[in-house]
Image 1 (cartoon, rainbow, N blue to C red):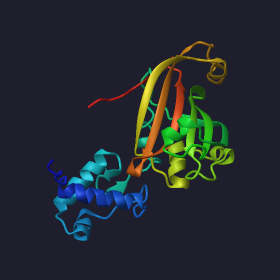
Image 2 (cartoon, rainbow, N blue to C red; image 1 turned 90 degrees about the vertical axis):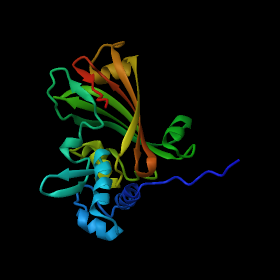
Image 3 (cartoon, rainbow, N blue to C red; image 1 turned 135 degrees about the vertical axis):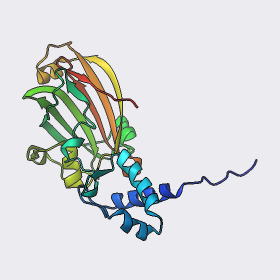
Length: 242
């Protein structure tokens, strides 16, 4: 059997990896400007064109944001433009409204089989579980149950959640240094049980959209597992394919 040949990586991909390392180590923090293309070219001893290609890919992956006339910045969940990247629920009238996150409960537990598998942690490892609703124009539309690794999110309490005015991912980024990079979702139809019907103000048995998500940070590390139930009476789930 012939030995496998080493995988060739284009130079700009190697520079991209080095830049991701700087993002992951918090050398460049969310919302901050990164060095100019010229500075990065000198730092990595490559051409500006090579740096530009690396930045183009990072911008396409929503890790960096180009701002005309200002430079390139680290993407942040606190940027209003990022709100609907992970929330694909759109009102049927087409008018996007920023939802209000309302915490219902938050407690510590030990990871069961499913949570351990989804989060890539040991069975029995500490987890934090929170329940919340998303309200659109004061009306509850989504109820989420979210599991988080306790080791990463130490200090997350009901009081912390109640004191946060922005998005949940913005809180995770600012307080715990965890940036959500990508997510995988499984979607199916379910019927509202009694508890959920009371939370969302719908009749028991109402059709709902069940959205189960695992969210990853740098290094493809899972840091959130959530199960959400969406009322689609006045909303629909939008997914753009390209």
